[in-house]
Image 1 (tube, helix red, strand yellow):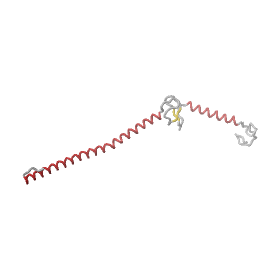
Image 2 (cartoon, one colour):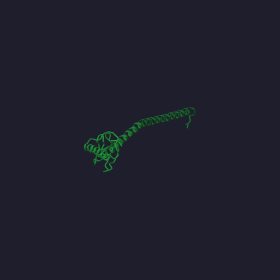
Image 3 (cartoon, one colour):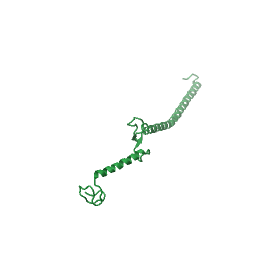
Image 4 (cartoon, one colour):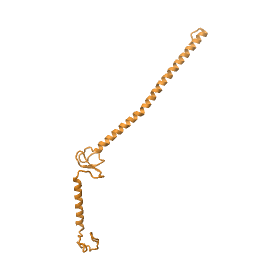
Length: 150
């Protein structure tokens, strides 16, 4: 075994190093480190500033820490800020999609009206032409035969 302080070789049963006099009680040194860690954690908890790069946020309803991506607080059941932002972004996305559909529909409706009116115009033109042709044929038939033509 080696000294935890200076690194010199010592007997496993020794409680103090012969060279530097440091205590070799492993449990006591671990307890000291844990005490220091707990003390530092309590200092961090006492400040209201959020921890950097933390994945936890405070619930707006009960002030307990919850995951950033949680939609509902497991303690109080309240909706988190993330859920509200998620709903807002979903509504904005749906509104954008709706506007995009309308923008795509407008040219189709305009083209439909143009086709409808062009078809009516051509159809009426053909009817008028056929009617005029029939009238002309009847006139010529009467001139030649002096009888009404069908």
